[in-house]
Length: 296
Image 1: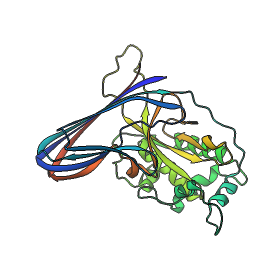
Image 2 (image 1 turned 90 degrees about the vertical axis):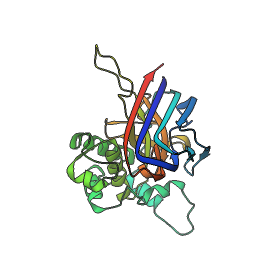
Image 3 (image 1 turned 30 degrees about the vertical axis):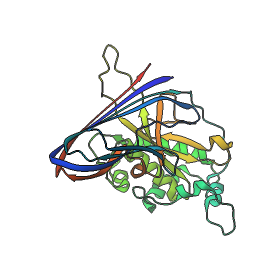
């Protein structure tokens, strides 16, 4: 599938912003099952510096340094990618065996996935998450089967409700109220897995949506998306992270489906926020975001 993604961000400030530095995670990854054909990042006002670097997780990020006073910041990201159909590999390893493999043992070989077992800024390891996950993780159960069951349960138990949470809403609060948005559901699923001693990471990206029959798709009517990924070490080297989308009850490798586009991978949202930064001035602001994902 060939897709175009247009991601528009606009900040309006009051009073004027004198200087600003931002970090953008808006360039889709090149990875198995996804090829980036084109990416363009336009910023107004023109940054005095715009550098692309690769972070510790292999994500492309752009540093923006704005030295021109401004009342409005516009960031336009245009990308084109091709994606491939997804599969769900066959795995038999038990979740207890994986937990033991990831547990620290002096002198044992280091497994890079073990970093994703620990708590992170937006994903705590708390007993409430383990309690919710435990009915899915029966003794001797296959890790992948148990993780997919947990995703299935979340899809039934939780309600997607816009504006029911904010970007910094704690995962435990979203778990308690049983509603939220894709970011919350990804954080909850990751917290459940980590609280059982398993490795899970956060995936930011996009999902192609289609308008209702007879309707025209409006530009900017989509949104960025988020889901989780669980480490399954008995799969072949390139397949060991299986993606789980509790918002839509879809699982697969290298993504939940070919209609998904992966932007970045991290411990949680705080690692891969599409745009974040520091400003001098601009005591108040309004934010407008529009996303369009379309087949080409």
